[in-house]
Image 1 (tube, rainbow over the protein chains, first blue to last red):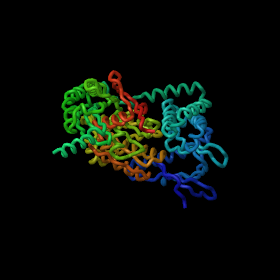
Image 2 (cartoon, rainbow over the protein chains, first blue to last red):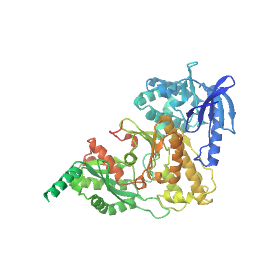
Image 3 (cartoon, rainbow over the protein chains, first blue to last red):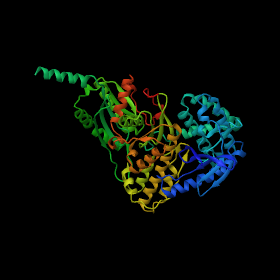
Image 4 (cartoon, rainbow over the protein chains, first blue to last red):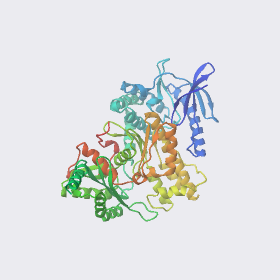
Length: 210
Length: 345
């Protein structure tokens, strides 16, 4: 009945119907390679987290699909289907779209939502109403710590460099411009300072040097 | 007789003159390795000695560098002898210029500079991580893989960029190798503790909950180390088991994300931790689920070795790149994404 349209790293995305409505079934299936306790814990936590953050994100001004049903025991969320291209498919031709990503992310951050996976693949331009929708809140959490906000931005930067390498610099600049619209120049400066600190943190060489 | 001589001469011309070859010296941490590789990718020799710190201790940079300096002359000789070549037959001298432990790196760099100046050979500084990746590509025949780099100093997922390797995801604090070594030290093993922990983990039964931290494509292990150190009253087998299960699952998840998001069809796992059987098992599942091929590296070349320096040396040499002896420094914290890799696009 439901058709598998995408197999992500942590969930299968199926397309089906919820009554008369087109719906996405996001099912977190067991991972055969993971120890059962850990697998169950993660799937449950992420299902609950995603389902609870999505409405909050909408309140903050980021469009998210409506949730129809949450199955804690089946690790399933049924939600509104947003039909349209992802930003991942469009950004290389139109780097200015990254500004939209920046605006959305700063709206989320302003109410203490850390997306946790701000990937261009998680932003969909709805064919129906031409609005950008944010999806995949499985790694999201609530925090207003500068550290967590800066890590979210770090993920964006890394992701743009790896997935959109030819337009990376331009796209990241647009992203920052978009971000500062809501966060303000001062807020952005603080975050970039923290970002710099995170990027310098001993990840490069070995840390055992005397 | 004459014919035999001629034949030998032609053969010499063929193998001896036609193919470039160079000497690579690896000395970033525990291992001092020397290898000779030719431009066809044939590893003509690959010898090494590994410094072993006293049990319960980490690597002491000064002691390790002393070990390297003692072993170096013999290993250079052994590598040449095994390849039946003289140093004069080399087209270049390559050395690991970082990242790593300063005193250890300097042993290799000093030796490389001396050989380069005395024998008038071009000198080529090579990034240790790039060495792991390029040797991995050579040995497995991968062309455009998602790379999981798990050496002592790196826990990274990379994809090829424009004349460089681009970081897709990485640890925000400790590397996987450091996590394992530091846990190992806490329970009395010397570094590198990977093989001992792996063995211990096989007898683990009870899973102890540890923090599982994945942020986007990034990982964080520092919380896990703190929390496992508070559980040391439990059986070490269970702890080793839980540490591996949790840390490896994190690595597996971000690897799967990388495959799903890039759509690439090869997963290359390099670095010392790649030798772990449980991790390989998990990554096999991951590759399967994403329809990708995982190509194992021969164990002998998974850890640090001279060949990982000599082979990129060949690639740089072909691209016409070398350094001046006076610029052939070491860089203890050389970022892999700042390294120019002209043969990748």
